[in-house]
Amino acid sequence: MSDLLSVGEARAILAAAPLRSRPTRVALASARGHVLARAVRSDRDLPPFDRAAVDGYAIRLAEPWQGDHRFRVVGSVAAGERYAGTLRPGTAVRIMTGAPVPRGADGVVMVERSELLAGGEVRLQGPFAGSAGRPGLAARGEDARRGDQLLPRGRRLEPADLAVLASVGCIEVPVVALPRVAMINTGPEVVRPDVRPGPTQIRNSNGPLLRALLEGGGLGSIVTERAVGDTQSAIVRAIRRAEEAGAEVILLTGGVSMGDFDLVPAAVTEAGYRTRFHRVALRPGKPLLFATAGGGRRPARDGGGTRTGDRGAERAAVSRAVFGLPGNPVSVLATAWEFVLPYLRAAAGRVDVGPSALVAEAPERIARKPGLTHFVLASLSTAADGALAVREVAGNGSGDFVAAARANAIVPLEADHPVVEAGARCVVHPLYREGWGGGSWQ
Image (tube, rainbow, N blue to C red; front, side, top):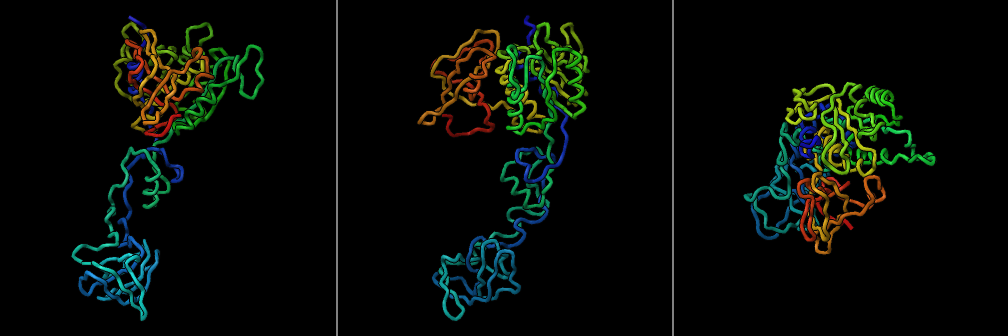
């Protein structure tokens, strides 16, 4: 039996150890994309008064009419104003859209059906009958009554929702806090992008990649980012400093495999975390590690370590989590998109944790050897007829970040049959476009 966890088992363990959520408040202007921590109710009727739905004349009928009819104009009212009197039969008030309809009005006739006459009268074109309701106005409370729930707890806020929040005066919005994230890059060979690297050094490409994934998707607040050398003590100190900075999720890149300097697994244990899994049957990213602290059920050991015991773990929230990602850029992209970002979405209160999926046709064969789940970098495009097509992006392995820049999707190939034949349809995970529902991929 393989000592590697399947991708499905790894996802189940992540779901069973969610990060404990924190309620907070954000300004209305910054609330888009956040998830409501509690329901929002109307603080008054909506509309709060009978409101004119068109520019025109509010009228009081003397009798129903079918053709033209004359009314005596007794005043006007604009939005934000109120007509003080009560309309009497045969009278009209000039009114603007959004203004309160005068008391006694049977409805509003739009200005396009009016002709202003001499002597303070207006001729209005019929038909108009009070028995048909009160045309031309929005009645008080027809959208919502005071105390009605307008937005439910757990809703991810979109622009139209912000209009609803503004309408009830919710300018400090109760939401689920975004997780606080720390990034730690291991290895003395990695230098900052602004540093000229030596003959055996490389610039840090993983840090900007992860930061863009988190901040672009609104998935986390980065509290600290640092680089450390390949010693266990240095990694432990970096983890503890991340905790002191308030980090709830710590992303370590590099040092997570099986080499002499792959010290992240031991450092994570020394720092007080329980490893939930290490090494998953996938490519790229097989050395992926996930560990937690501060809560969660501790399963019984069965001789296979915590990895096997956690396969059946019950759901229990934790206060901190660590991901150990392989150091190669393509591995970082694949494991972050497929595992880290869904975990962060769940921590932010999202239901649609992803990765999002759609179906496309593969004009050319995509194939790998069985035994591992493969996340293949791909290019997704839209044909003239709207059909989606996906092609593999050729590259030189998990270190080829140049090839990764040409990809806008991942094709997941299942371990038992990692093949998509030419002309077949397959599942595709679009990159970078959450909630994508149309448009061109060219």
